Image 1 (cartoon, rainbow, N blue to C red):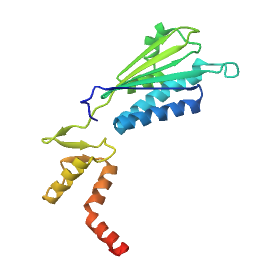
Image 2: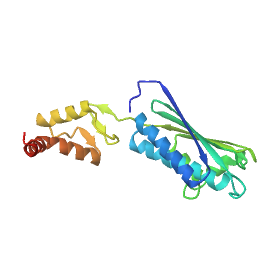
Image 3: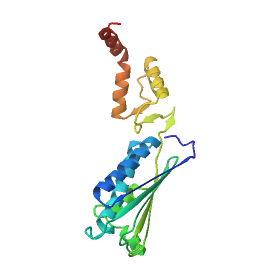
Image 4: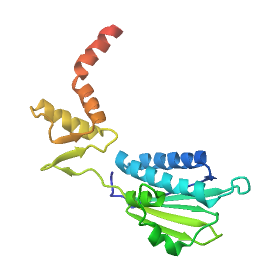
Length: 209
């Protein structure tokens, strides 16, 4: 992911405090991160952590679904490789001074503990009967480009044209391309690229050119 720009991107979503509303918000946020260049592993961390917090809202913020028509608000801010997410509700709230104790719970039993493990930072603001806000902070690591260590593309979604040219040139020059660390999906792309002359010949023959 490129980090030269300091441009800030903001995004928000509001929805009903139910499982479908939560799922739609997570999908919307991940679509934003895909466009912003966040790698698959970073998107997986963010999506999983945000889903945990939203499920907490669904399960605990509005305990009486027949009486309470609960909603949530999700706000995201992206600056380069850093992401801040705030999830707020207007539910029953809780005593936030006890969050330090709750955060030590086993991740196998606590959604907030799982979210905290996946994020670089997590904070909670809440008061009884006044709703809650959970703040999450993430930092996405970019691929390391260094000739002495090779090029790590294991987290990239696609090959940029310059990198594709560079890799193919190395193979043509007799290198085996081991300087590139590829994900399985990108390895398939490289295989197709290496077999391109044969594929092109077949296409021309089929079209009569």
